[in-house]
Image (cartoon, rainbow, N blue to C red; front, side):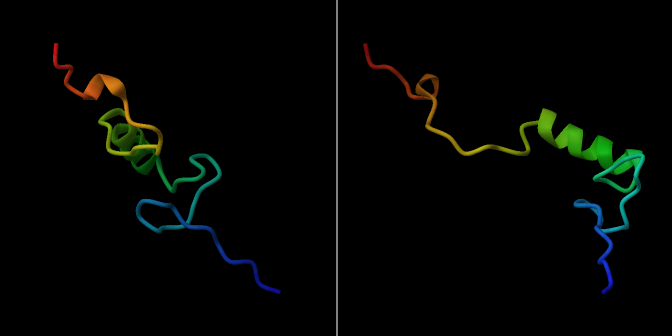
Length: 55
């Protein structure tokens, strides 16, 4: 039985234990920057602060 090698989610290179689940510090930092720049979003209810209020 062969075990498939898990790959980096950004560049598909083999993962390293030091930077898991990424292959390098570069990919790890790219992923963090994506989170910090609101590049990823989690599903949830709409925010009421985004809806203009008519008063």
